Length: 431
Image (cartoon, rainbow, N blue to C red; front, side, top):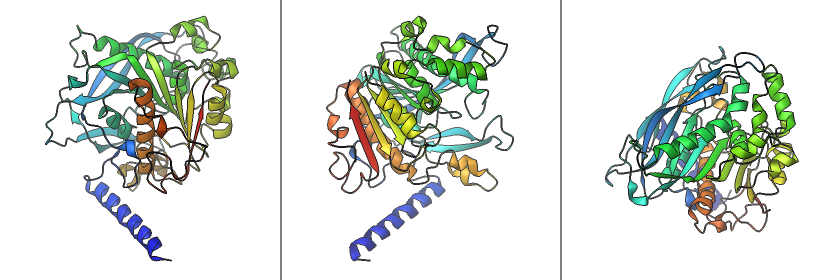
């Protein structure tokens, strides 16, 4: 082994030790911080970040988990959201926040609920910074199960760049209240739309909310992971297929409540919200199960960024996420592929609590990637999502960061340090 090779081995080992030590100490490196090889746009922006939790209620929604076909009761659907935003914080202050989350699954006695905490770089309940005017809105939707805190590395990062970012706890789909799958199938895109309208209301000039005047709901992007991607694509114009309605009926005892989200439904087309300008879908679920057909994918006309692992064994790659990319013929779309990654290309890295003695290994594997460093994935996602949203929500000249002469992200991809784009592929297609 030559001197150059020995140097890189030593550098890798030293960096790894520092990361483990910092995380073990509970300070130092925090989810979303930069590794030495992070791409250019992964760096945080110029704004300090505040964070608040608010509770919403979506009234008179179909309770598909109770009753029978055609006779489902209605219920007021509670939704907790976490909001990150540019904040007024003294430049000398480097705020941190403690997030409270949960490992395990509410409906699985083999995976009991275990609370844990982790750190972020934001100030709880800080005063908003209105200096940037009305900021673009980004709505984030987690997987099944998941939580509104699953992507804090990205939500904090975007807020620091002048976005108001709202992440949803989808009721009956979080770790703590996990319930039947039909609720997730029905409610994901409905939750997205409702939260968008609520943010617009709370941002109104006469609102008494801290959001008054802070965001521009007419300039919104959706970000979804797994089932969140399933719902985000539907909210953005990809109507579900008849096969989805059949699957939903089988799982829900014959309910037809999902029909209004199918491509053939006049109600669906009327529901599409022009305030949504772009969509990011990490590992979106459903294509392998026939959730979309050619007509449904053709209905997607908004700029779309898809992010996938080439070995995704949950959503599928060739017949799953890549097939969505190929079928969305009326949208300008990108597909970023992590070669040899599986499904976990979006969340925070595994929390230290998942390494504790007595915790099911499934808790670690729910977050982990077998062939990639999760912090590395986080930095790349920060970079690529910043470029994509910068183009479509802020009109920034960031296309060079996404456009490549071929699919392989080899040396020479703008924004990446030399030798550091290996293992990535980027595809780009226009209508």
